[in-house]
Amino acid sequence: MITAIGIDDEPLALNVIQAFCKKNEEVKLLEVFMETTAALNYLKENPVNLIFLDINMPSISGIEFLKYVHKDTMVIFTTAYSEYAVEGFNLNAIDYLLKPFDYARFSSAVEKAVEFYRFKIQAAQSPQYLFIKVDYSVMKIPVADIEYVEGLDNYLKIHLPEKKSVMARMSMKALMEKLSDKEFLRVHRSYIVPFSKVQAVRNKTIYLKNVEIPVGANYVDQVLQLFKHN
Image (tube, rainbow, N blue to C red; front, side, top):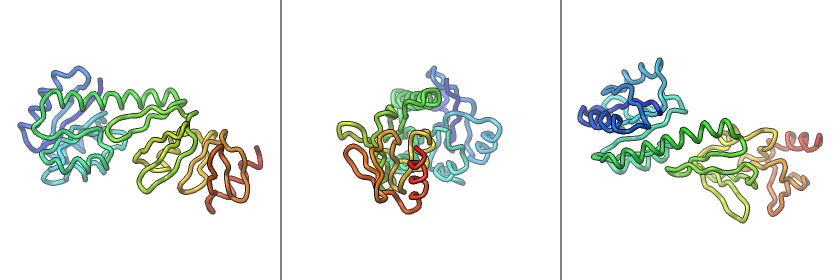
């Protein structure tokens, strides 16, 4: 069971969240708040797994509120405005609930949060897999299958065997934190390669099986030193 709080300036909306949480065995609602300041003070002493968060709050918007919340805390946005769905996606929300929502829709959003929570635990225990958030779902990727990673603006393209790939909205730095630095090497501001798949290094170029990867100017010394000792 995951723990949660609800934040909304409408009492009726909080009543709905409370009622739905009582019906759902996967989530335990600890508190509800009508003010973001009170919620922040609570979270300082009582971290939770999930927040049901109204975007359109009077003092601090839900989007601003997230800046002060621990990055590992999952968020399900609740809003009366469908145009906020895009912002929810950009902020890596687990899901967004468009008011008025029924129990089935609420339950579906909670299930996504539970799955993501379980995936994070399993990922920490099983480093042979990556669990990557893609849109509003989580994809399990065997680390051994990663051919290389390519940075594309605000997305990463994880190249897999048989010309398959996965697009994920995350930074190169965030991905490197999930990978072993003994197995993966960042060789360019836009490329990460698995050490085991490197076939040759020549003239500031790394040769994999079917692709050539440039070595960035800021990474040349690091790459040459690594391959010099291997």
